[in-house]
Length: 98
Image (cartoon, rainbow, N blue to C red; front, side):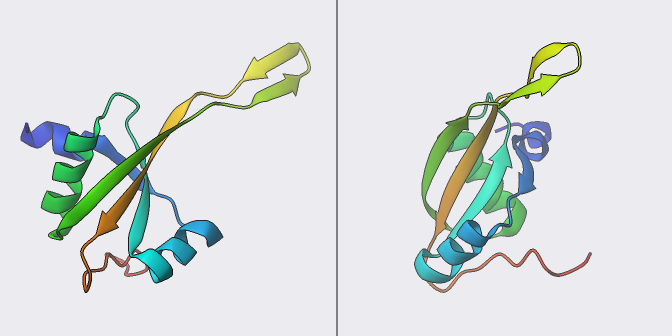
């Protein structure tokens, strides 16, 4: 994988109640990823950026919501979410300030 592509695949971690529950129960981490990224690219990016071993990757395409505006109806952009399962004993901590 191209070194420049690694930094563009993962957009941000999603830290919600559901994602923290998954991290505690089944050792999964949730990321917002590039809409053109596939499972292989996501796995390689997580392994190289965070120095962990990835067991599996599940990808969900999230449809953007339709919003009512003053001038009519608008639509938020579609985006992609990735559930990354890590091997047991490994963890990614997003609360540490860099």
